Image (tube, rainbow, N blue to C red; front, top):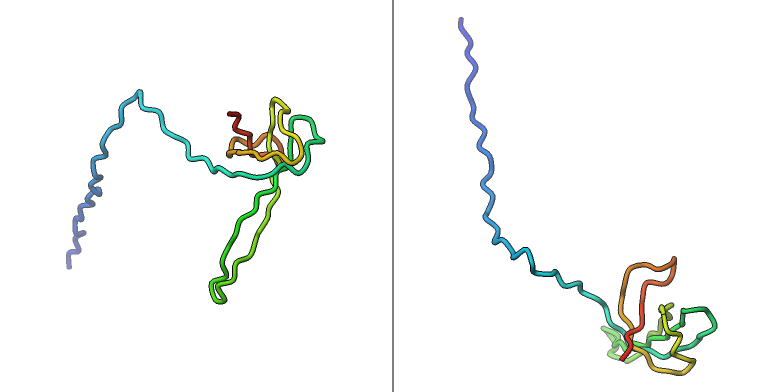
Length: 104
């Protein structure tokens, strides 16, 4: 009795051709943008900003306010307590500080 091995061919999957982007095109970074009120400016180049968001309960349809505090980098130390600021996300500058102020 003679045994023979069957030959099997493995076919590599065909990859779809991707359109090539121009080498000079810059990729845009998506940044989160918030508006809030400064609570504290006691730290050097850092302010604490309170952002309030109004949400609606899914079942009872009642509106309620959620507030959150962010530590924001203020390079010029321009903003004081009570000022309204706009800030965006950036690279982490410290453990808690991942936001920077937009100056206008």
